[in-house]
Image (cartoon, rainbow, N blue to C red):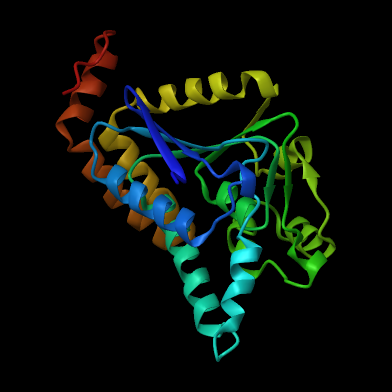
Amino acid sequence: MTLLTRDDDGAVAHLTMTAPARLNALSDGMLAALHETLDQIATDQSVRAVILSGAGKAFCAGHDLKEMQGKRQAPDGGAAAFKDLFDRCAAVMHRIQTLPQPVIAQVHGLATAAGCQLAATCDMVMAADDARFGVNGVNIGLFCSTPMVALTRAIPRKAAFEILTTGRFIDAQEAQSLGLVNKIVPAETLSDATRELAATVASKLPAAVRYGKAAFYAQAEMMTRDAYAFTGDVIVQNMLDADTDEGIQAFLEKRSPDWE
């Protein structure tokens, strides 16, 4: 069974989670497929942007609870298996943010628990007007501790704490107002709108975007003074790139850049 498909359109790689019967749950197989494919894309210089979407009626419903319950049969009650699962999930989230190319989540239907974590981890989120987001594990007695990491880095802390502790869902409009979603479009135009955004990103100088994405996440963890020192070095490196020189010269000469 294919859990993840990849369809490249020019410089944009479109990944689709294809387990609609399980609402594209992050099963062991799905996590493995995501990590393997993202690793392949990381070294594929023909790809300049990535779209991540889900087949069927949902983006992603989080971890596969039925599969997780099966892990309880181990002598330790599943402790080692659960730790391994959450470590592998965290590795996928880390891979998304360390990927040289920007990743855009194309969200429709539900993005819940680790599925909300997945959307929040992506660099940008395009949402259908019918999309709903939730970190609702608390409703079944499981606080969304790992999804909380991505969520509290995407939206204000008090808002994150409220939806984590109440388990309530938020619609696309509220998600956008909190900063989780970049843009909302009608469900029927979601795919086209996401491709348009990805194509815009893909049209930029790849080296500049690689420098920028890596620096974006690194500086966010630093104190202001350290962040300026770090990004100063990054922008110097970017300035010394031959294609950057061409881009600036083209701007000054009022022409299109001739990038290699």
